[in-house]
Amino acid sequence: MRVAREAQPEKREDTDMKYLVVGAGGTGGAMAAYLGKAGKDVTLIARGEHLAAMRENGLRLRLRTGDGETVAYIPAVRCMSAEEYAASGETPDVIWLCTKSYSVESIAPFLNRVAGNAMIIPILNGVRISQFVRRYVHAGRIIDGSIYIAAQKDGAGGVLMKSPLFQVTFGAEKGFGPETITQEAAAEIAADLTEAGAQITVSDDIVRDTVHKLSFTSPTAAVGIYFHDTIGGMQVPGPMRDMAAAMTREVQALGEAMGAVYDIDLAEAMLQKADRMLPDANASLQRDVEAGRENEFETLIIEPVRIGATYGLEMPTFREAIRKIGPTLGFPPEVE
Image 1 (cartoon, one colour):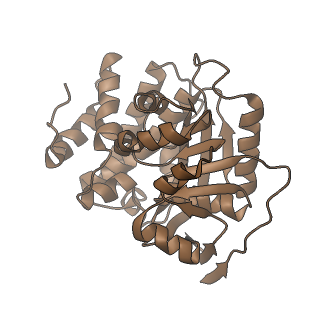
Image 2 (tube, helix red, strand yellow):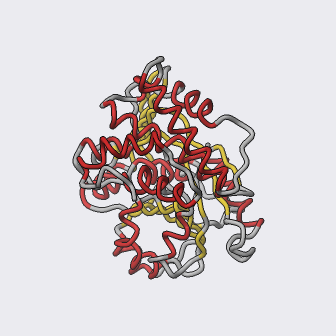
């Protein structure tokens, strides 16, 4: 194990993007950590013991790979409560919204107060999330985004990444107009994230790409809950792997019905990605369900079936997952 304390990097003179990360769990914490390590101007909104620990020691990032584990403490990330940031009068250029979908309504007053004309990029699971966020957030310019990352909160002040996987996609949905994000702004954000260590795609079809993300998050979460197993159970031939592949094919059919065109087999891509993960990894939805916490089961598992029904799709494997899991979470076994 290697332990390091990241010194405060000097800010680049040619960088003036001010980033605000809302949501200090695995996704938001990792996003802030990587931007901070690269010397970007980034503030992470947190609260309670999590905030206190980061103020004292810096954000603790543990990265586990097949070669071992690296631990870094990153004081370059400025951590504040939502109340403190709002009172500061600061206005960010880019807001990475890294909460869960069920938290958007409660965080909306804060975003409406501080966003100004900032670009708000929700890194939430689902399709057309920008339209969902716009129900509650009236400030800023909202575009869609997605992330591939195996990260979770790791006690007070910490984030654990179980894989070096860090892929970010963002873009405005067609029809929203060029005022949502300029090519220059997109290029600057992409350059900052690339320097921070992420693999970046500025999407020309964000519906296609967010459905692609759904093709990984929904099946892996559903089968993990269904079989009470981790990613390792998908890495060997058997019912868990077969069900995950079937669900992914149903997601691809949904994307194609919505007008997306794919030049790859999403089921094959999903399995290859799962095979590269550590066997004890699991989806955040699965962790929330198993811990009895509020969760995104409706967003990730039920909503695709509802959307599919509008295109005449049955999605039988999704329906089987809902039939078994839904009643345990207070949902009916059938989707109308």
